[in-house]
Image (cartoon, rainbow, N blue to C red; front, side, top):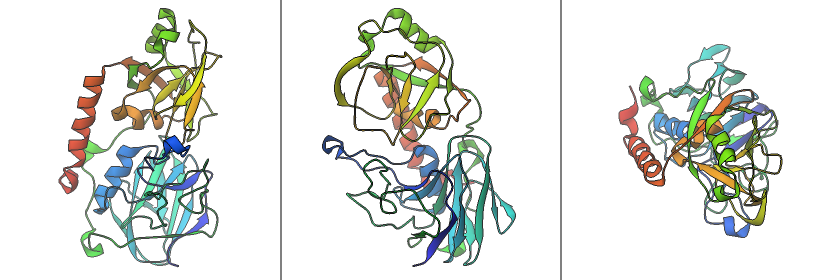
Length: 316
């Protein structure tokens, strides 16, 4: 098998796409990328189908050996990466040859970065997705983390490799994931379980991302959010971006690798258009919340979707 051979796997490296939907009622997490914006931009750079799978790296650096000629694009949180010892730029197509070594050595900003590949990572789809569901142990590479000496097969490029040179994302579309961020939230579905003071706390005070954060969720440290009617409810389905507040009063922002149900009250949900910005906060970064309405959040999401539809027009 040819593709990308894993020389060093990193700590939390998986194959991900946009997720596996339609099965949460059966207890299967959608999973998928933490940062859908960067992932989709990476596929645009390479001329891929928007759902083409990529290698997701979380705060620890893998090393991959190329065993077939292809092209890759590094996107997401800013990293220092090298190809055969030479520093590689991000957000642009890089043609690589068999024997080339891709080393990601330093995460400078953000929580997750991606190695997108022309034609996508071609592991077999499971229930319509190539995403790794770590909890359900399915998808990706046998449902688990990428391991040393694993080979990630790559698909057939839609854009000829000879046309890859010079394909790079316009600077206006490259996000900055450094430091503090404010993300918009829609209040509910159990905001009535909190006191007015508790809601004000969420919307006016900064929170620090904890070292305990992972693909399941961002655990936040800061001022305690006051419950009015207790922290527990009957377990119910939960969506990405939901902000649970357990008994200790410290919020948890649920991310792509979350469980499917939960019994803690949810004070608010991060607007879909901002989830990638929340997910890219690394331990020690500051996160703030501001309230918005459903109509505004939907409008912003539609604007972003229209941006993606421009495809190669986003390249400089």
